[in-house]
Image (cartoon, rainbow, N blue to C red; front, side):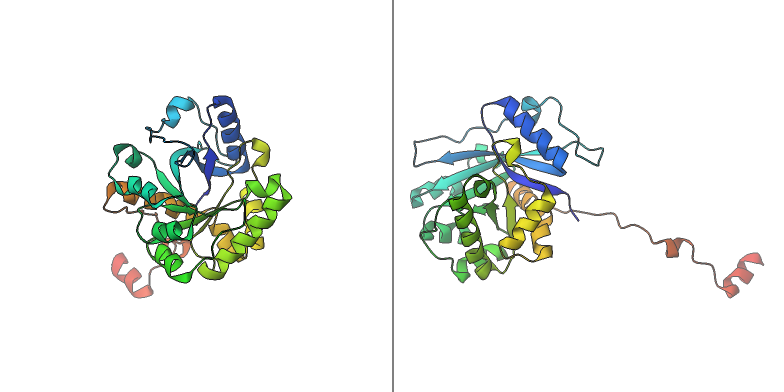
Length: 268
């Protein structure tokens, strides 16, 4: 199984808090995290800036618990769209957009959710978990997003902070599961403090409350995250990505004795 990942750690101005989040994530066993830069066009007009390299922010990355490897830090851009005109930025060939490892969109209306699932070139579609959804999920756009390799993201940190948000989180997640049948789900934290982070096995258990099966819940914090990262690499290259895995040799193949007829020939 692929390593565990948390694809949503808010990128704030304080480097010390980010460093503590990375250390907590590595201690909990996450092998990869994504620093999330959010742009909300409704608040004010913002420009997409060039992502800051993780090496510039963190001169030394923490080592993942139980391994000898350092945690992998990715860059992510999330666009909060409340008007169809906001989607034009994703359709444009912006040089700064291509520099991000993961592109996510947070649609506020049913029309924008349909556009995000069917036409936008993104890796993640964020589901609102802090309030009641203003629309119902429909099967055609969800199935098209699954066919296009787009994943749906659910957050669990808001459910830790407030009981009302916890109710909305579970309710909205179950509504999505009834349509997508547990496919292409990613569960992230959006934790602003280390205390809001949970271990990958605790998060997979939380996925059972969302209506996921045991295997689907584990995939939501491991293999689906890996597929999202590969989808982002494919989007950046505009061609494709080949991922190879070395197949271990079986002990039986190495120690299989030669047949008697071959032994005679070799001895002769």
